[in-house]
Length: 627
Image 1: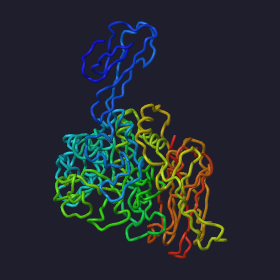
Image 2 (image 1 turned 30 degrees about the vertical axis):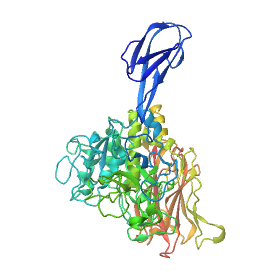
Image 3 (image 1 turned 120 degrees about the vertical axis):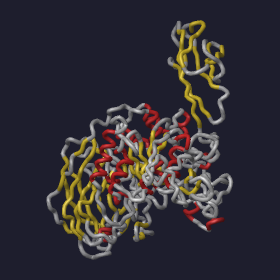
Image 4 (image 1 turned 90 degrees about the vertical axis):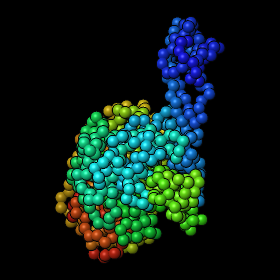
């Protein structure tokens, strides 16, 4: 066989071992006879690397007179053998039950299963990602190799360096960026996509935020900030409000433009945090109800079908204590708890369970990790973090979002032709069900008759819809699985989702239905959706007009023609002090894949007595997106 020696690959043929120098076509000195066989073997692999090889004719028996073969080998790697010293504590990549420098370990196997993708050589190579956040330390030792030179933008000084020089207690964007693309090197940890390319847009720390700056961060600008060549936008932010808000039509138009025109018209991916308000939002504390105080639908941007909204899971494989629930969640991903050590903080409970190990502002004078912060030994500059360049306390749906972004970068490397809807479909199809025995939250509403025989399911458990997709308001369609998603992406048939369209809003007439107080019976109404133009659901929007002096009492449900029930707004939530819902839009992903044709039913329930006045369902409308 011709070629250079010394690569560690050999071709085994009829008892002969022949060196193979590199991928390509190789010629046999003597043609293979009929019935001969060959195989590719690997030896002397570097530590931490995995080489996977294939031959054009496959391994096995060949026809006569084969004179050449083409060998293709991919050099992959694994988390467990990585040279990056903190990788062993990054439970979201490979959960072995490690503590991530906190006091309590997680549950082995509760991770994103990224090793199968890494082993095939996928690392997000060349995929441009925008971190729209507070900043990005572009010279950080574990990020610099992946930062696109001149590709970022600082809205405060007009430079291309968004390094945060103001905040001394941690730069959120730098920690987010690490979870996406910490480099494969001999320092720090690993990003989910350790060869993805980073841009930073510090909109969140902009001295005087403007809508145009926000739009420019999301792909509206071809100049500075240059965001139109971004493939994936990380949005680890949201609103913290207990006052109903409507979507900004200009922002909605930008998201639509991004999925329509960016990435060569295949569509950019917009990945967004669900929120951190399960226990409280604003001044409203919902601790002890078992229901989410904030709803993912409270953020109007989350009600757009162009978003991939992400909830957070802890190292034990259940919803993180803070993670906002809601029907707008697409998938969930590791976000962690709080990562503290009782020895320095005195904390207990979820505070000492693993958070996320990622990049922090460099040095011990600033950052989540700094001298005297007294949250964990690691964050105090304890070994192996003596330079305080990393933290073990990053958490939130702000962490789950970049983990998901990293998985999408691996998918786009595996199949660059995927459209934005294809990516969403693959994530939905490969997400794994976690916490499967989670019981519904069931309450007895005082004025339901008979109350002892008619409990109200305020938060359903896992459901399986008519299209076979599982859904839970805590987890969306499940937890991301990088290995399964990449494998599906590789063999994915393009065009199978057809043309994206919608029914437009189909509205009821004026109803003015009274909503009985503290009753599971509620007020119900139906609407008919025609058989065209949508044949399979990709998202459902519900628009309501409801009068009530304390809308936090209200639960809003939607039931599909197939009988699938989704709670789009739970009772006893953070809208407790707000009155009325005027053209308020909610979104549900629980109906994904179903045929929408037929009768849809809305049900509005008054679940508490903050105010004993009866509310009224004035009217409602439904819009189905899909193909």
